[in-house]
Length: 228
Image 1 (cartoon, one colour):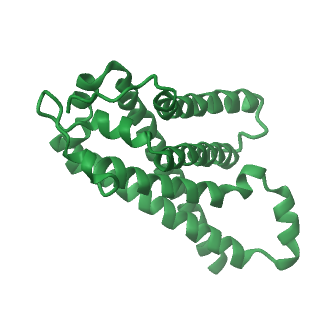
Image 2 (image 1 turned 90 degrees about the horizontal axis):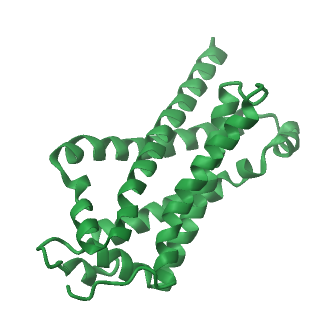
Image 3 (image 1 turned 180 degrees about the vertical axis):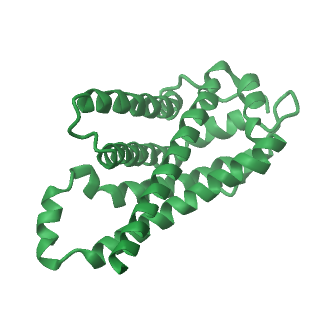
């Protein structure tokens, strides 16, 4: 009976990781559709940049996202702790050799992703990093989010943090794709390779879309609007 309880608990934790992971991937994809509007200029980006400040989003979407983020971390830590306690010591080397290389980097990519999320929130949302930029107002009376992003990414430390964080996010989501296919017993299915290609193409498109913004700033394709 004890083993059944453990098995159920492990399955429940994996479901939590999977569901919260899907919620956050959906957010990442949706958020990109808003971020790429920066290429349309200051007016468009500042106008659409407040999409996450509507009453519906504030009361529903933000709490769901925050809860998903916290549950994802807590369930992942619990699974890792349970695996260490239940795995026999003589199998440790075998389990490590069987693990995928991105699986072994899961902790590293998770740390990069977590650090990236914290820096992004403090920089672009809360305004604790480069707080003077958050006092800027555009000619239409809105907070100048456009210049917060462009001038912020011109800072080498901020730009490097974004690039490393996005790379960590790519590998983290990639491991999630592999884990999902394994959990669904699709790794040996006939269409498994094609499915992996489609999912990785989706992740790479998201990665390229986000990474294009700091690159555009560094190469001068996105210029600050100094009228603020």
